[in-house]
Length: 244
Image (cartoon, one colour):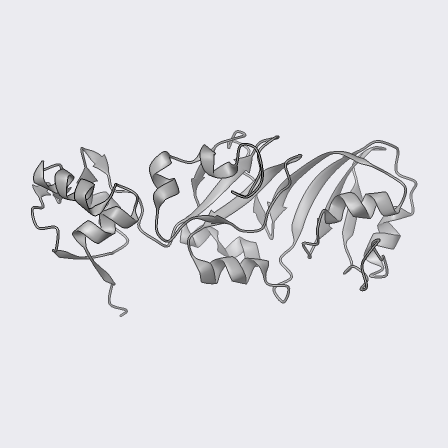
């Protein structure tokens, strides 16, 4: 049986974004940090960081935020960017302010551009992040594309051929699956993540994407009840479909 890691109380709370060491000390002094209903008074006390810690510990009457590793599923809305370096509102602003101060930090697993909506994952687990985005993993990503012009009928065969070369690229794309839904809408499933890949694929066949929405990664679907801009914790047992 693997022994649970331990952490100093003050460091744990600081790393979860509850404040600086001094601010955390104040919370402890006020008696609002409770474990199993009893106040904790020693900032240096080491606690076992177990899966049930959030259920046993409260801060000012609210359950402790989940310790790492934490993975979120988020419904990215239109007009929001995925990087701190890009101009405009970013996806991290959709999270609780305290979560934006966590250490290790939460990072997006891949990106969706500002004009693309849908399923986005964020995690503080570096190993899990790299497992999902690794080219060797070939994790499939499905998009719903709305097109400016009707499909011609030859796109599915070309996308599946493994021979499509994008402008400026030196290697062809891996085979992708196109499922037409109407004359101007289709699902496209890809196993790569090249820059603006879906938009460039349709541009290569003389079309233009006017709307793009990611609804699936692996076999993990965007929950129908998760509204744009909302998120929830992705439980460890829910992560397996990503690699199905």
